[in-house]
Image (cartoon, rainbow, N blue to C red; front, side, top):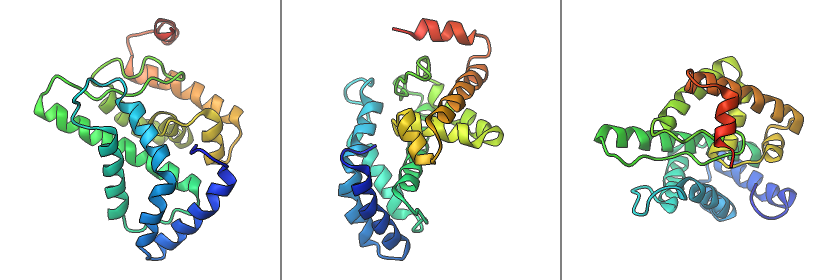
Length: 204
């Protein structure tokens, strides 16, 4: 999660979220400096594998996230954990919308997903951004927690430990859910390929 002591960071974020929910719109502007560096790091991880001149730059991604937060109806986010979970899902929506627009424009360039140790083969195909969004919606109907963990891992760059802290569960529980999610996503997104072989091929 963001740099610094998470306990020290959590209090001002929690208070600002409460103020924002209570109707003080200035609270969102005060919140942004506290979380900007973390969100920019996440955005940069998405763009690192993109060619130069890509139409969606890291700062633009964070800017789009802020605009969506600002246009939201003061969501009741009770803690920094809820806030970062909300940001992860919003990042997913932004990237998916962007991929849809680019697909509609029939351009050759595509937005890739960042590599993760959990699902190293994900992002190898141009269609993975849209396919993952659809797959996560389906997974959420079966195992909402596993889908949420994948969102945090991929779209917000959380480690397993960070995801466990956000969801208030143990790291072994996160690890088990990721194991299930990896196998499920492989069957859903690569039905003609072997899960173990995919993992071996993607290994450095």
